[in-house]
Image (cartoon, rainbow, N blue to C red; front, side, top):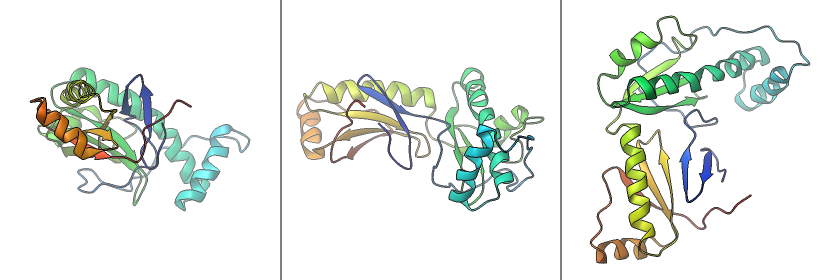
Length: 208
């Protein structure tokens, strides 16, 4: 299932947000210097990266050269997220790329966000364009909460899908009839975990 501005992956009954997603809305409260010079590779104009950069430049009003710089850096985001997940599992809340009003990456930690981030970006290409913000829940907790909430909701017999909204630091249950699900959960004596929100949708995803 793909929607804008957030990209989702459908996996069985559950789907989760791509952490390093594109076209996300900007977030505030920067903890690093914005608009730092970006490292840029030299690519020929017939290269696939250069071609993609032309579309990016048009969409975000930057030069093609700037677009090449930005797109080339996106490959650094996933490995960094994997590092946080393995080394900071208790506090890491996820990360995402933002493109406006400035280009950069935002990462969430539940404790000491700036101090936690600092040693990982001393010599990293993303240094200067990555922001650290405080979150209430870790990504590991949200994943556990998603599984629990989805199971509770599915047990009511009401069709439901679920996802993790990284920027909002919460689990979301997507349902067509919110009142019906709320009533069914109450009658079953089921309490959703913390940081779970029921979201109304007009329809559920369908296999593509």
